[in-house]
Amino acid sequence: MPDLSSRLPLIGVIGAIAIAVLGGIYFGRQPAASLPPPVPNTVVAEQHLVVHVSGAVASPGLVSLTEPTRVADAVEAAGGATTDADLAAINLAGPVQDGDHIVVPTIGERVGVDDGLIDLNRSNAARIAELHGIGPVLAERIVAHRDEHGPFASIEDLLDVPGIGEAKLALLRSGVSPP
Image (cartoon, rainbow, N blue to C red; front, side, top):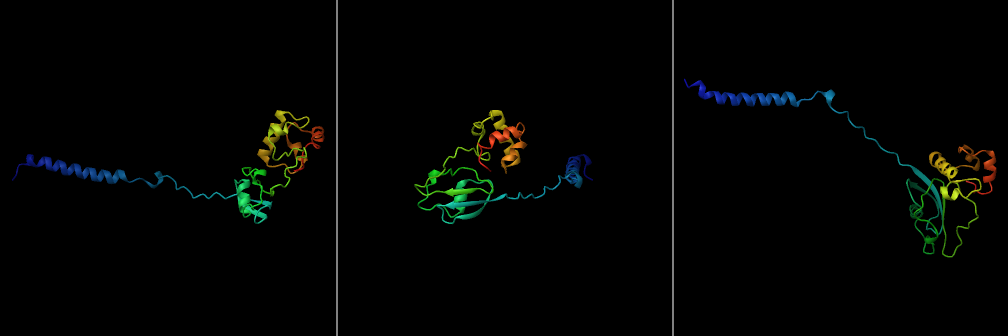
């Protein structure tokens, strides 16, 4: 019979391999509760807006766009500008809001006649601060209210802005354009 001491290293190696294999099987399994929960597929709904594009475009009318979008996108959606369009007269980088009317003028057409009235839905705080009785702080409140609640539907909506009451509204009526 061969000597047992000469076989001990071989038995040790076989035992170590068996322990490693069994340990790998045991420790490699994870209970189902420890697995991370599956991530649901979420689809972000696109926001659509409709604008009216008229003037020197190939297909004037209503166009549907996906937010965020610019005036240039609206012009393209209306078939693009015609050869007599004066694109330098409009701000192609301007943001577009639902319900806007974009007029693309022809070359030589008089556009943007300034009636001196301030558009509360488009003007920045510095422009709004030019109104009688409105300073920079109140102008910022008006812009913040517009950003938080959306465009003003009527001049009376200004009453929702902290710091504007009936008396202040009466002063503002003649300086702002109706929404």
